[in-house]
Image (cartoon, rainbow, N blue to C red; front, side, top):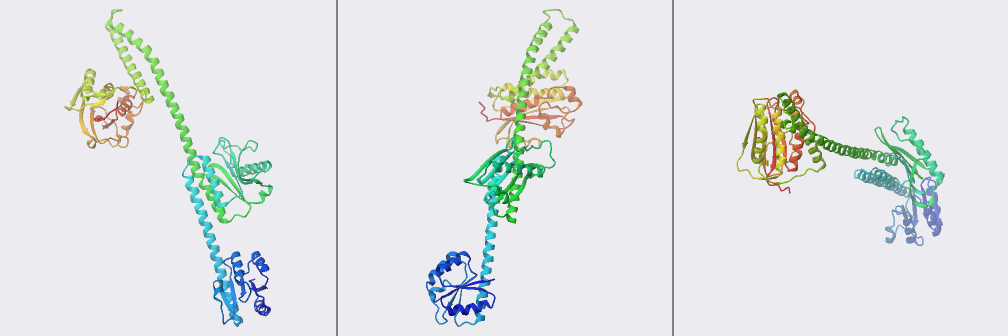
Length: 561
């Protein structure tokens, strides 16, 4: 029923308006005592307030009414012949003493509709403001989630986001991912007794069991006696009682697919709205994805650490074994040298044949050990380099002299096509000889007899270098001049899909000829890392059964000292 308060000390006016409003089902009352008027409007503001303009202290009454509710509806009863300008600014409408009953009721009705419309607008604005505030809280929380891979911080951001959006009394957050054992994080408005904490622990275990009915072996077990509690209290001077369990509450798991990171329960003394529930569930779901990412990132770090440890152990093992093999191998080689010299005993042809075979295999084994040692040094960053001005044609000439006889014994022709007047490069000449020796040795190994192997050198600019498409993503050249060396053979060739694997450690291209040729598969990986130490690069072009071209480049203007 619409409540109308008439402020007047004129009994005749009071009686008249009382008869008008009562017979039209309005709740009508009148007051003339200022203190009582203020008490009434402070306790419950009437729907309509009609003020007799002849009432004393009318300005003071208006100020008091507006101080309680600035949107209150005030109608002034005035003399039809005189409306005071001073009260116009306070009025929503006016009625006069000679106005008909229908017109008075019509004025009241119009102002009631206006009041209802204003209240609806005010409520809508409030709801909109609340929605915008929650959206801002969700956006801010989501932004904080995306800024870290620390799981403890993600849980903290979730709780802070809920506090900002929902103003909870208490949150109980079970975290299964921030520490080695499950943790119950209590964020409370007031202090909690030990008995209440034990009750909350039991409630959390029951909640966890309700969402984890199908336990897997890897799931963390919850034990109320060992469940760790982390407590944060805003106002320790006050204390919650067991009445807390009569508060309104909401519960949500923190999960993504089959991954369960915990659960969260929130308590609030006042009732949660549907919008509160949506906001709560959204935040609990939002945190699951970054928690999953953080878990994967942590697993990746741990896996990398294990791999790095295994790599160090492998390198140390290779280094130790290689050194241990080199000592007896040196003694065997020295003994074979003495025997083959004929100083100990006269050798017949069969003995010389077998001793030569043994020497070749000792030399082969020595090469394998040297490759293993070089690889372990490179990976450990302990390879020594002695950089100095070097002419690549000098290196090519040395390698040709060293391997021409080897190529000849296999029925191959080893030739060179060196460009004249090539500028010097800053390089370790012995390491470049090692690179080129590996490339030429491989060409000899995989090229059938009566074929030709060619070593060429040239000066090229980076923009004119054509790198095979399989290597373009892994090779980046500076905008400068390079010395390019190419080892071309007419051997078995390599399929396109296998080109990149040719530079993998211990790799050999799988075909009968390569298996027959043997080897460790370390020559090309070592060459690649030696060239990278010179700020150079290596790649190859090849076609199956039509031979291969191995290229390497070293920048001309490089200072590596």
